[in-house]
Length: 71
Image (cartoon, rainbow, N blue to C red):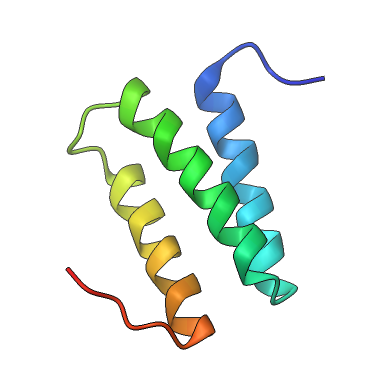
């Protein structure tokens, strides 16, 4: 059962992304991080630190995959 609160869903997606990163399933991790980011961008102010943290998580996934990160 999914939570009714979008911010709670974003937290779940972040945790799943983190778990997939640990399991080295980077494509699945990136998908979950991006889904969480989409929710965050509509539920918290653009300057909220959780958004920066999620962008960092996405960049780390790209780094693990050997993909260059660009600004």
